Length: 190
Image (cartoon, rainbow, N blue to C red; front, side, top):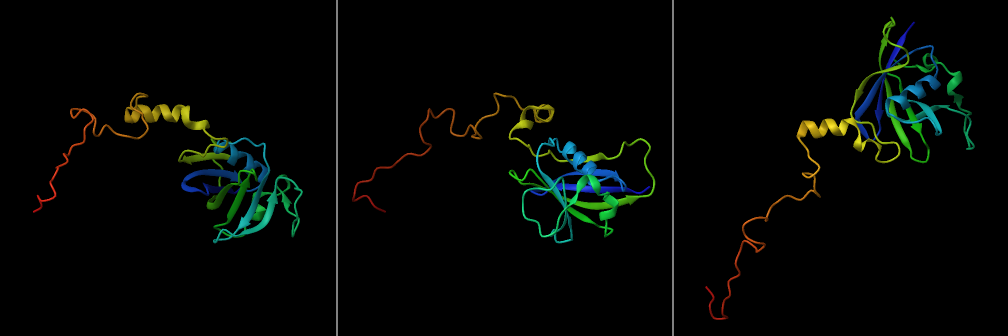
């Protein structure tokens, strides 16, 4: 059984990605769920995949369901389409759009095909994570373990965090400017 390894990039920042492995017989709905889980997103919104080319142009649509919108060609349905049936190229690319109001877009590329399963992995699975996932609903990630790790690593203290202004000018000159204005009479020119 072939195992497909995909790299899923967040469109706005290509250093934020997840590597996902999935059996070629599993469907796009399984892929949809593991992508959302790997980016800490819920699955409450509309979603669709597009088969794509090297220029990231939208091709055949593979949708979560039929939506009330005009289609040139009826989309395939995620739960009915095996991933392997849509692999047309050894470097196959897909676009994944999620939550059409927020317009989350992920770029997906096939990076490896393995012939053997790893018995230690429960497919589909995220096997590599790079970068902090975007926050689906705003500021979710600011007060979690990653911030604590960052505080410890850089020895950040809550009193050390300010509005981004340093301590320049503060100190022994009691608020006066560091230059003196010279007063010259109209006839005292060089």
